[in-house]
Image (tube, rainbow, N blue to C red; front, side, top):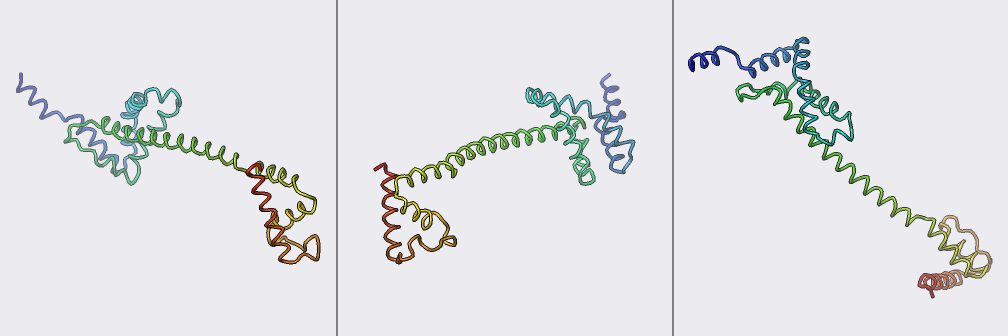
Length: 199
């Protein structure tokens, strides 16, 4: 009886060897072989991906098909280079071979999702920080400071301190000397510092 079982093992081709022959036909470009490979392996691949994803699949029902499609793309890419690596001598079925790729694709997907969520959270925090330091509060603060100044000081502030240098025109009083301009700037800076300190 043991001999008969042993003879059967020797004479009957293993399923892994059958898989390898099918792969060889695919590598030769036989379209019917690709179809047979797909119909033989795809349902099992879908079941495996669904199992590996677990609760993740509930959040995105299309994710199972997406992962399976990524696996098939890997197998077809670069003239089926990865598929050609299948070795029946390792006593591994083609289905298990494909599930290995699916596991890697799921891990890559989960890592990418974690990175995406992290970037979104970081981007949201940066957006809030940017809104806090935007021009609107600065403008209102400058308006408040300007309201503490005389009319002439307000004109000087607008003309010499707040406008870009290329937009500076002649001073309100034509007789302001460079020294006088410096003194007024210095005085307004002193007042602004005192205002910012709340003094």
